[in-house]
Image 1 (cartoon, rainbow, N blue to C red):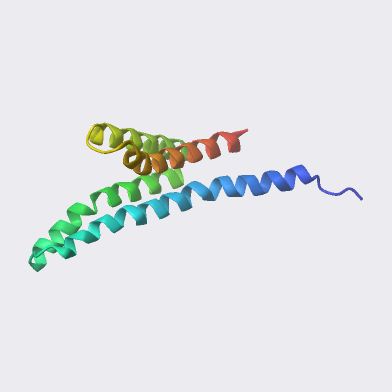
Image 2 (cartoon, rainbow, N blue to C red):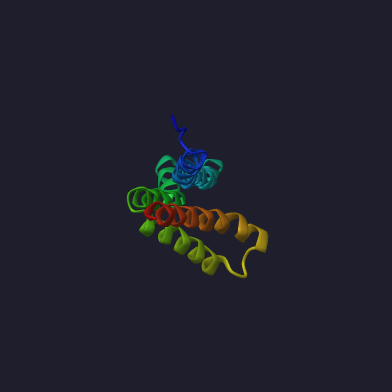
Length: 125
């Protein structure tokens, strides 16, 4: 009896890793970004002002959640969206922040987008 080739088992593991890694990274990055919204509780706002400030601070989180939902269903579109979000962030803060700060915020967006695109194109082969 023939054994299954080791190559197909490795390919399955790689495909599974490549499928889940951008999704998990996107969830973790969204949680990380959401933490920055918590600074509104340190201000001396009234209840409704805190709610409004929290909603405004969570706009990037909402954008990332929408991007993740799109990417989960349509990897090509989602990968492009994450890369565009990374570029958009760089354009918005260029010259205002240090290079390392820009890299820490835009880098994960590029990585997530590339992983979604890589998964899409390798799975199609």
